[in-house]
Length: 246
Image 1 (cartoon, rainbow, N blue to C red):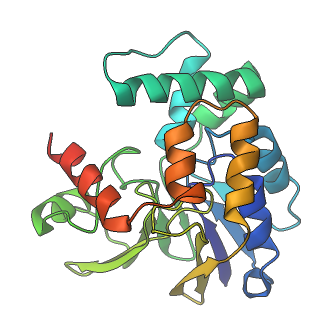
Image 2 (tube, helix red, strand yellow; image 1 turned 45 degrees about the vertical axis):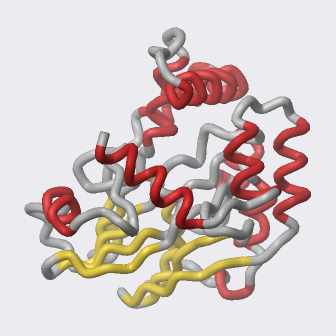
């Protein structure tokens, strides 16, 4: 079986189109959207692309889908710069999609299993658990405790990773739409007959970022830092690891 895993698209249809147009992504038997397809500056366009695919598409819920669905009911709790950004981006996307579509995203499952591979967004137990390239082995072991699948695929940190945790191989597929890799290339994962291969697709990410900013989307920092003037990957990794330890 051939599976195309797409994580953290974040409303960037230009990046999504680049991956879908990559010859190495052709012939998939299934597409797995691994969470955080939203929020994003052009969320509706990205979702429409995915819903229009000819191959079966399966989804897992990311914290982004949960937050967008929650924003329909009213403002999210504020109190910090990060919380304010979460609230504003979720609200913008919820308004764009409308209540029915936003609620539908919030009802997606936390995990999916396809051909023996367990897919999640952050970890199998939470859609927002922070597991980075720098996280200690103890945190990884706790996050994957009780999992029987030999291969687990996630995302959330927008950085590709491939590691062994006990008898489990955990792969972070990276981010299609907002990669924190020090460049703007779209990241994705191809799995063929149970064998995973991390991949990247180059495209005009600067132009894509500018089109996103032209919409008035409030998360300027993430778009600039991932697409327009990408920051060094380790800077973001350390920031996420600090957040995980708070």
